[in-house]
Image 1: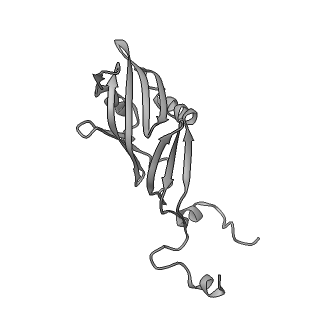
Image 2: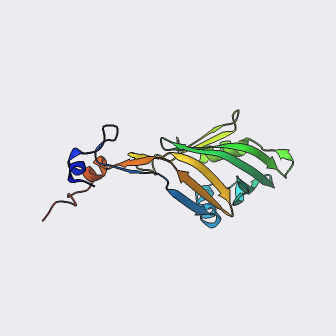
Image 3: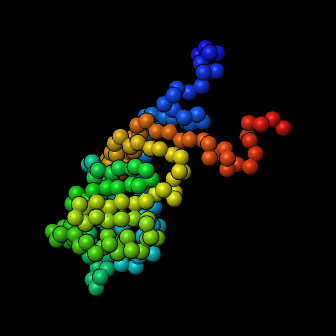
Length: 180
């Protein structure tokens, strides 16, 4: 790399103080997924048990819910997308007792129990959306190219993504690059 490239700065289409990457893969195993989902649903008394199984290209969720009686549910989620801090997925198949259509009240109840604006459910489109903007840095832009569910894990394959450092540096009390 020539010294000239150091003095020119970033290309015009990329803002200064930006970290960029492409080709990042994040893997979550079923144990981790189950721990996160159980913690997120622990305040919902109707959910007795929940099991996440990423296999054969699908994210399977089996839950035992109670509304008078205990009901086993089976969900197949596809088309996971993350955009502007919102994670959405399509409920390809949802069954109770393996043969009854999924009762929509369950997802409505989950959404009601979460803090306002944290989740949205669109029953006509069978789409569930989680607002992760409070968990993700505001200056983080992620592009998920693909989500692969197999061998007991979910692989998130990221395309071009970036993180702006402007607010990060403004939030720290002292400049980490300043000499004492």
